[in-house]
Length: 86
Image 1 (cartoon, rainbow, N blue to C red):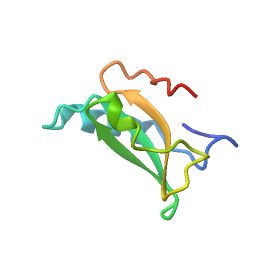
Image 2: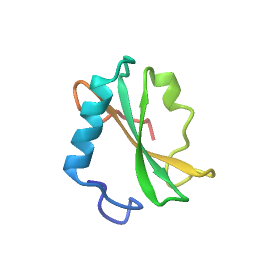
Image 3: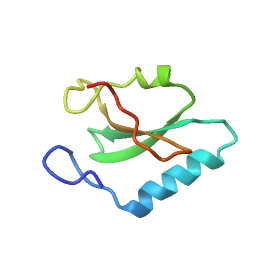
């Protein structure tokens, strides 16, 4: 996933599926999985949030100015990608 020149790196389907399961099984009732690129570590990290408003705390890749950039957002239960209105 996330292969090609539009992304800073890729992840396997297995890793992505693991992140979905972890988010759904959490004691906290998360609703979204954010795929976030860490500039310093040069790797993707899963971030779980409960509401759409929390997504706004992240800057979109490739225009992010900080150490993290939002790559994509997924609904944990439908597993569909959430449009970011770009």
